[in-house]
Image (spheres, helix red, strand yellow):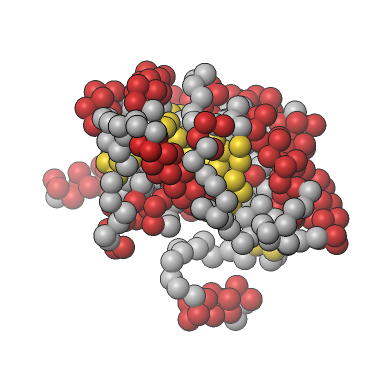
Length: 419
Ligand SMILES: Cc1ncc(COP(=O)(O)O)c(C=O)c1O
């Protein structure tokens, strides 16, 4: 039995079977590569689902963890430490918002945003404004797995087994301005969006839809909340994906790459919205600890020092151009979407999408598939053009072989019929 076999057998017995893992045992990483137990290097175009923005083993992260862990790892939110205000300053400057609450994960940040919206609506009611408690979320949205997040997440498969979900959520057809107008009212306390939907298939909002959401929210005092957990922190070439639209939300959430692989989430809001929160209303034991904040600061500083926003834009444009070239060669590629290094190639079948992920893994390239048919690319921001070329060549080969196998299968199928 190999070590991997032993681990698989033990996990199968011991863990809740929530994950369908690929049979690879990773033990290390360097730059854009993750390394398995045999020393084989995989080009990682997924970066731990959009987390390892600086790649693996980045000196800024490794050294900060070593240094900070020697002084202080945890102290709780009952006391001060040096990290929260310093990271808070960096985040407010870069998001255009005024105040931060630190959480641990994406879903926890999103729960904080939902609670903030309800608390703010309550405050407005106490000030005589007519405003309800309803959330408008979007079809195909994904906001996480805890109850509030799950209840504002569109796909049935995430909600249905755990019902009843949190009431007061209605879903609006994606990018459908008329549907948004029809469903929005004084009952709405917040409109919930991802500027570019991630799990939903890397789908950007239209300028018109986003602007209408902003205008409707402004018309009643409801909040516009942008979930930037996947698209934010520089992935699209700007700190937040909403900045491509020139639209400012009242609240945003960050997580994934925020602390370079350590768990850290953040909710940010305007000064006006922050009025709704008082001591004791919300909190967390671990959120915004000294270690994760120190790494968060180091990640932002490294992104700026190494010019990684520009690099995400440049490498992303090149990647997208090469995906479009693939689409021009292969009918199976039906659409190419995304911004910066948040990219997707939509294929014409579930079967081909699955096969492509598996074939890429055989060629030691990590990608993933979301929404059944969408190949998703969330590489580290340190990606170089030659990495893109490697990936495109592999995809070209896989699609070519698949098309050849199909056209070879077709006549023999025809032969059957005639025979
Ligand atoms: C847009 C968005 N929101 C929220 C989440 C949930 O984050 P976490 O898995 O850290 O709870 C994710 C995770 O994929 C996400 O992409």
